Length: 87
Image (cartoon, rainbow, N blue to C red; front, side, top):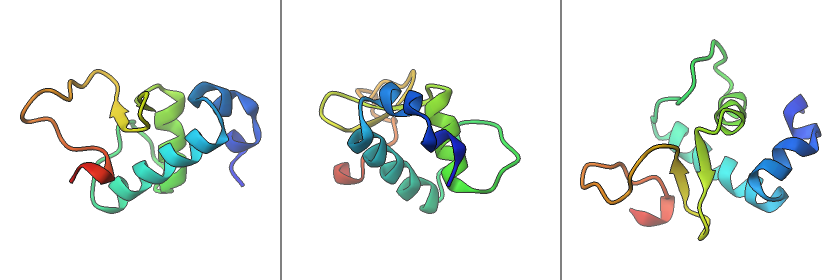
């Protein structure tokens, strides 16, 4: 088990265990589909990449549990669709 998951800080940062699980699953689907990591890392472990993205505030769940990338504007036409339910 990854050490970051043992700490309550990451759970509290996201808003609970369910939200953490949802965010991680959605991001893992994107990475498996070929998305590039939003953080620089030497690790190829996708779980570690997702955890690092969360810890660095690169991704989050909005009020309706859609995954967003920090600093992106979802109203732009060229913005990538990030939620697996938005395809």
